[in-house]
Image (cartoon, rainbow, N blue to C red; front, side, top):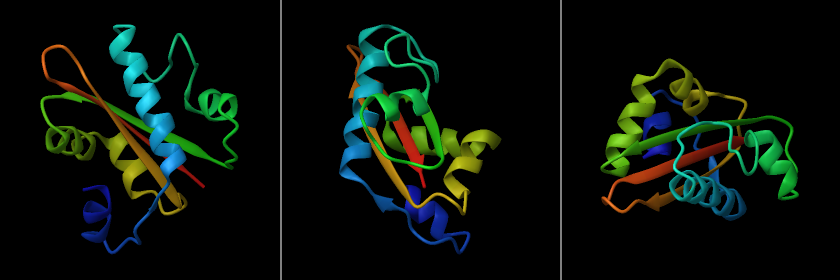
Amino acid sequence: MLNLDRARYDLPSLALDPELCRIARIKSEDMRDHHYFAHTSPTYGDVRAMLTAFGYDYNAAGENIAHHATAEKCQAAFLSSPGHRRNIMNKSYKKFGVGIAVDAQGFIYMTQIFVR
């Protein structure tokens, strides 16, 4: 969905990075398991601190988080938020990862991590 949205604005696709997906999934699970919804994790800190803690090499990083019934609703929410939309449309990012965790009510926590 993310790369389809970028394509609508004639932006190149971002490479899906398996390690970023793993880290994004851990962030989503952390939010679910510790009952919070924030860019700063009480366990890992912000996205930059988390990437560093996991030994991921990057020059710049951004993060989108959402909690909705479906992945499609998460992506729509990202696009309707100026800050989240900026991350999706940022021309300097080259790779991304996405991670999902499902809560007890069946809603998903979605984390997108962007890097260059």
